[in-house]
Length: 210
Image (cartoon, rainbow, N blue to C red):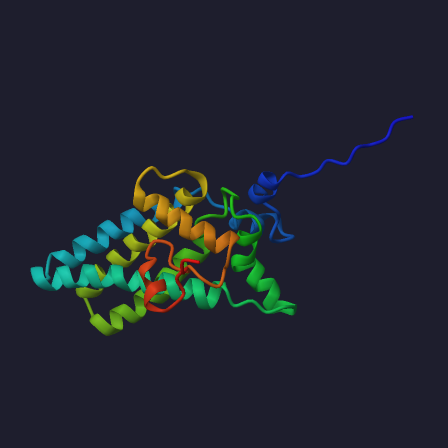
């Protein structure tokens, strides 16, 4: 007579697990993406926007537009993470949406295929941002602001993957990883800035020394 021994999932396996998000196989495939995919999509877009913007823009205006676009991204990253990703209804459709948008990442933070934003989300979101920039700044300045905004997005996406899967050697890298791991494993009501943690200090959501 034999008895089956239940297989216990280790903590590391649980953190790296990749459970299905949708019943539809093709929808579920859209939820997974290689971490380099955003580079293939957005680097050519950034190059085109930069060339279109820089040709007819005064140097000082171009610098201000590029700096402004990056700062706009860092604010967007902070508030998207804080308000949208961490809006957490307890039940119903809202709870399901939260799990799809961000909850699954906190349940399985080392899932290698769900650490960057899938193109099905990032491309429409980029268009949603670009249209108001065109209305506010017009061309060609809006091209430069958007190019810099997208650079900030790529830095965020690739840094997010790096912090989960590598051990940084530099003091800055170790600090960024520490802050993000605290967000995951200590207190997820703090530390919303991943690539730009200074906004946590500005808005009072930084980790304080005990």
